[in-house]
Picture 1 (tube, rainbow, N blue to C red):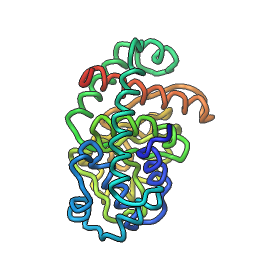
Picture 2: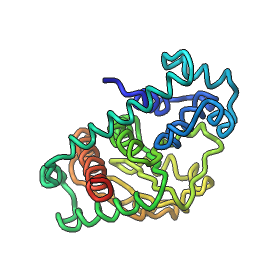
Picture 3: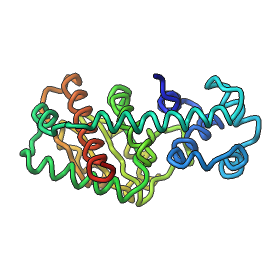
Length: 250
């Protein structure tokens, strides 16, 4: 079944314009865990949207009004929660870690996963930065973590008002690390140094670049061909959501 939150994420992740559609989508993601408390009036007042803007957003997703849209969100939220619960049954970490070629030994790798799980619990927002394919791999992670109460968004350069804060976790995904070169000059003025930076890479050269030092690093091995790296990204993110669920929800 097509989850409404997944459709919203598909739109947001591929968005090119800083308009009311983008802001309403982000508002829904930010408040998704408490969306049952948001009627039409509250969405307008807290988000500073007009009637026409909210209604237009809902119509773009195939709903005649906000009430129908909200009911679908509530139904999907319950459905996804049940899906997460059933998928997490009898999952073994070894199934994932055996396929991840990391420079860390198994115990250190699991300790890093556990530390990040706690970090995610203690902070509210996760920001994903990466090229198109690695970011797309993260969508299932996004969907589950949003369902579990966290705000998970992709960073977009066009959002001039976007700023990082001390309660943010940035997951920067880059096999070669070159994305650090193209992004850091843009991100430093937006206060990225105040956020926790998690780097997933094959190139340790960029763990400290332009005086921006990664707080946590997943160094995975393999050729810089992208294919193997993308599978390893998926497994690392899967381990994070599995550990998070088991530690704080099961």
